[in-house]
Structures are given as C-alpha cells and as structure tokens.
Length: 93
Image 1 (cartoon, rainbow, N blue to C red):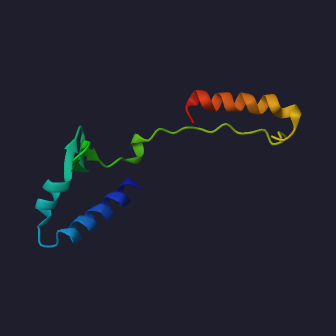
Image 2 (image 1 turned 180 degrees about the vertical axis):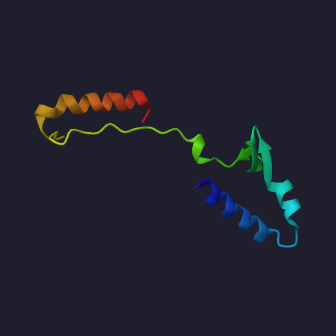
Image 3 (image 1 turned 90 degrees about the vertical axis):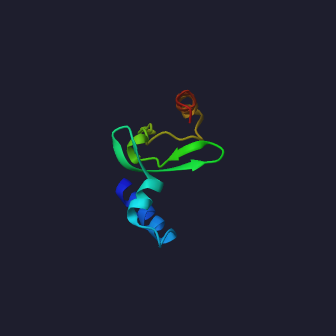
C-alpha cells in the first residue's frame, strides 16, 4: 500500500509541476527521515512539518470476538456485554 500511495503522489507532483525536472521535485517533496529515504513531507503553516504516514506506523488492534450465542437483548447476557463495554473503554475506543 505504501508504494502505491507514494507512486500516486509522485505522479501528482509531476503533473502539478510539469515544467520542473525530477531532481527539483525530489528536493521539494521527498526527504530523508531517520533511515527512510524518499518520504513525502510538506510544511504546514499551522503545524510545521507534516509527513506522509506509512502503514507500518499504524498499530494493529485486535478486536474481541463476541460469543455466537450471546444476545444483547437478553437479560441473561447483560453482564457479558457490560464487561465487553468496560474493556473497550479501557482500551480507549
């Protein structure tokens, strides 16, 4: 996914600055951050430097599977769904 988004942004920048060469485009939009090269980054007036978020920067959060026989409208399962709700609140969902 990261490569596909990068490629679309590169094509957009080539279209936007049609008369500029590729070296100028690389200096304007692509930077080296840490060990990564060719990272799209821009300067935002309000927040300063903004970089393109990559898929590896997003943490994976696993969901809690609900029992198949549990029914949210059944009073017997009320405690089960309350415990699930408390777990979600603690996780910050």
